[in-house]
Image (cartoon, rainbow, N blue to C red):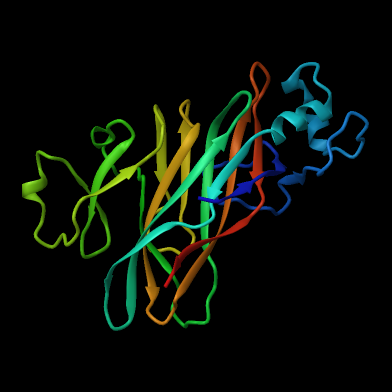
Length: 256
C-alpha cells in the first residue's frame, strides 16, 4: 500500500498542549526546508530553548527533529456496514508507521478532518478506536475483537462473552490490530464530530499504529476524503524534549 509522509514542519512553544486541537495561531515557528551547518535562517525558538540540548548547534537540533517521519496510508481500508434511504454507515481503518531513527516519541496527537462536500449533511465520525473507554483487559497482543451495534458504537468481544452480546449487534466480530503499542495511554476525542482525534502518551509509541472509525455519510456522496495531521513530543536521547507539528496530507477514506 502506498503512503504519504507527515513531515515535521512546525516547532511549538511550551505553552502548547498536545491534548488540545493542533492550532497554528501564534504558538509555533516554521522549520525551514533546508538544514545545513551554514543555515542562519533557523527558528528563533531553537535559540530560546537551547539549554535543553546542551552543546548542540541549532542546525543539529533541527536535523534531529526532521529525522522523524509518520507514514500514513494514502487510503483507508473501508467497508459499508449498513445503509438506509439517507445515509451509508462505514467502518474505516487507517494505518500509520512511525519512522524514528533516534530517540523516542513521548506523546502523539493524530487528527482527522473530513473534507467539506456538496451535500447539506456533514460527514460524521460516530465512534473511534482505540478509545479510552476500552478496558485494557481487551487489548491482548496489540489486538482487540470488536463488533458494531446499531448505534455504530464499538463493542469489545471476547470468547467468554460472545454468546451474551446484545441482540442488536449485526456484525460479525471485527479483529482490530492496534499495532505494537505497549504501556500507552490512549484518549479519543469522542464521536459525533467531523474532526475526530487521538492522543497517545507513554513509552511505547513506535513502529505501526492503527486507528479506526465508524462513519456516517450522506448516501449521495460516492467519495469521502479527509485531511490528516499529527503533532508529537520528540525526545532525541539525553537532551530535552521538543513539541513538533506536521504538515497536512489528504487521504482517501472511501470511494464507490
